[in-house]
Image 1 (cartoon, rainbow, N blue to C red):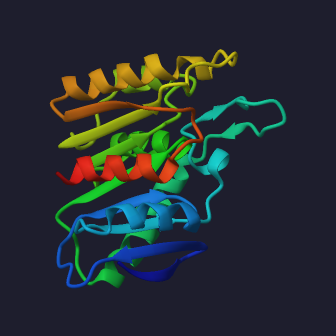
Image 2 (cartoon, rainbow, N blue to C red):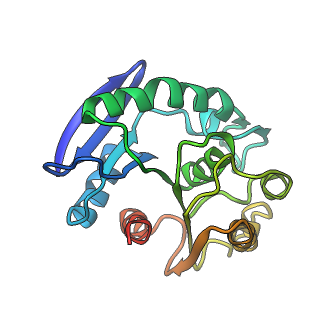
Length: 223
């Protein structure tokens, strides 16, 4: 894949694209350059464009509403996702699509951990995305399942992918220990809306095989 670095306001966006990719799906995500290089190496044979926002305040901008910190010594969640979604849709997406030279028929959103939570939240807040992937997503987040039950996405996604490591729910942290049940419930809610949904368990904890897990999700969305 080819690589380009874009500046969208105060954000640095990594853009990966194959040759002659006219109207390929554009996958929007949030990840570091190191993580994206690993993902790209695993999906370079499929015809998608990857746009990754690299500079992001995870706890501040990807959380849907304020909540206490999840770990001792960590930071509280500030709940800035609504404001960030406005920036994302009004500034970042136009810069990416001006760079690639077309408005895609299909935009997807994918994310790992808190970015996976944000990916699902974005499906409810904007109609831009036709597919989504939540990989090891923070769906334990306080009140998020209630939010999904009480609302409908602005656009029912064609396909939604969920995955977790099989040891992620094995923790003394009472909030995080709910992640498996919450993810399975989110899967059922999306299926009830009419989306094609897959939930997969991968071996290991939250920090294992990040690029591989993301690549699996993208491949499933692509098929």
